[in-house]
Image (cartoon, rainbow, N blue to C red; front, side, top):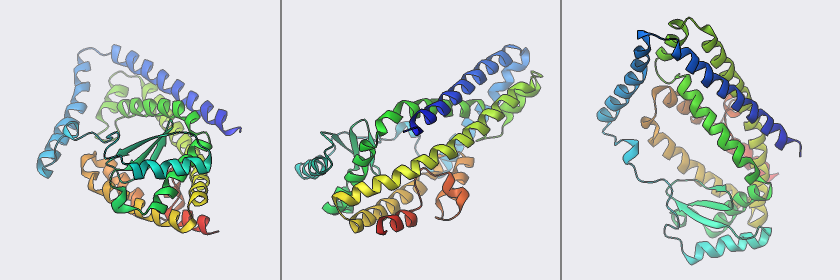
Length: 286
């Protein structure tokens, strides 16, 4: 099991790069005189643009939306029974069931997240396959990866703030030119490239784990039930994703539209943490 310490080593190096970048950004900002006030121009431009986009598309701000996760929403005896049956089959112990208003399923820290309207979407055998898939992540030790993923998420948010590629890039240019400190641009560029390479490696591990988790779903139900469940969930998740693209900055809209529009291309797949659906189906039928 060398992959766990290897992945943690990459995550630790990424965290160190981000911390170094933050300190360099603070040092760069401290060197400003009157020009320091100009750095607020880029965030202001972004905020104004996003507000105009929401007004034009009649969208409500993200902060006013209902919570994504609703614990025990409509949780009934049938759902609990089906989950318990799968837990017994896989000898996985007890887990908490959480229903949410998303069109996909998930697992984290002995909690299984299922679509609140699963009865309208899946048969009992298909639900058992989905639960088996998620419990497969538990059996493979997914909980040990959660701290690493939290570190990566925090690092991504900081990098996204320090390197605002989602808008004009004005802030990045200003920080490097006005301060006459090209090291800021160089450091962030190296961190960004490291994160891209690390993402490709992490996604490779993740896709392999998905194939293994699919086999757990097949084991507790059937290959066809797992396949039909994957088809239904992917169709619903893609529809949901495209409906919400307008709430993202322009560059993210373009990226996700390119990423989700078709299931072909090695580079496109390398940017995904799940394999293409047709590859998962082929593996399940093998």
